[in-house]
Length: 144
Image (tube, rainbow, N blue to C red; front, side, top):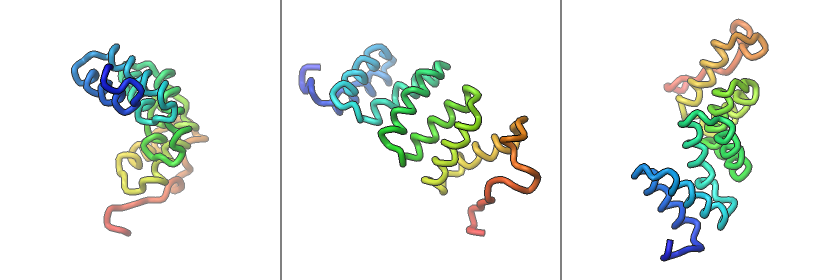
């Protein structure tokens, strides 16, 4: 990049364009450049996490999502992405913890609640599945 070689946002935006155009190697190079310039650039860590997750490379995805959580410990989306990746890997207890943190920050996000409810309701592990009638509080869209 010739226009702003030391601008992390420029590298990130070029990476997004590269991704849309299917130039994933170039996008990865731009994201690495953005992170080298600004190591705390959460969005630049999140994108490789999504790419790795989409390709089924859970360990690199989890590593990137952990970095986003480190940078943004109160970020609901960061916890949600990490929780989903941990769930796919089978790390249930930690996944549940991150999904709960995600919901705490965004109690209006039904998809997050649905994911957690499904895990709790269907887990074959008695330590994860709540006892009959117990578990997460019920929330409804009508304020009841």
